[in-house]
Picture 1 (cartoon, one colour):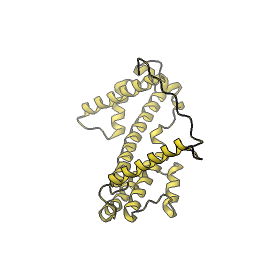
Picture 2 (cartoon, one colour):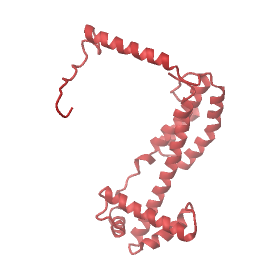
Picture 3 (cartoon, rainbow, N blue to C red):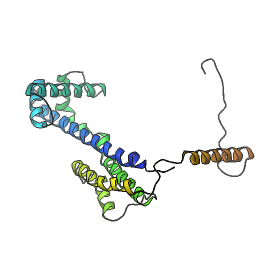
Picture 4 (cartoon, helix red, strand yellow):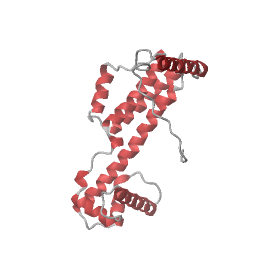
Length: 230
C-alpha cells in the first residue's frame, strides 16, 4: 500500500496548502484594514480605500493605475462575497461601510486560517519525512517538535513563522525521498488481493451470522426499491 509517493501525498501537499494559507492570511489582513479604515472614516470612497490599500499592500503588480484598479476589484469582490453570505444589507460599497461601522467586530477568524490547520500541515511534512527515512509510519511526535507543534496549535506562533519552518523542513524531506527504502510505486496487485480477501470474509461472516459486528450484530441492510426515477 505504501510507497515513495507519500512524498507528494504528504509533504508537497502540505507545503502547497501552507502557501495557500499565506495567501488567505494576506487577504484577511487586507480585509481587516479596509474595515478598520471605513469604521474610522465612513465617508471614504471606493477609490480612496483602493489607493490606501495599494500603499499598505506592497504585493500588487503593474503601474500605479493598474495597482489601484486591482485593489478596487478586490474591494468589490469583498463586499459581493459578504453580501452573498448575508452579512451586508446590500451588494454595494456603501453597505460595506455600514457594516464596518456597526458589525465588523462580529467577524471570526476564517476557518482556513485557524492555527490547527497550520499545525496539521506542518505535522504532515514531519510524518512524510520520518516515514520515508525509516520505512515505517510514526505518528507520535515527541521532544521539542511536539512542544513547537502544540504552541502552533494554540495560536502562539505567527503564520509567517510556520511557513518559514515548513520551508526549512523541505531539504530533509527531499533527502528522505532520495534515500528511502520504500518502493517507487505501491504494489497494486497485493493491495487488490487483500481487499478482495477482506470482501469475501465480510460476506462470509454476514451470511453465516457469526458473532461480531460483521455477522450477528451487523445492521440490517436497507430495502432496495426500484421506481421510474431510479
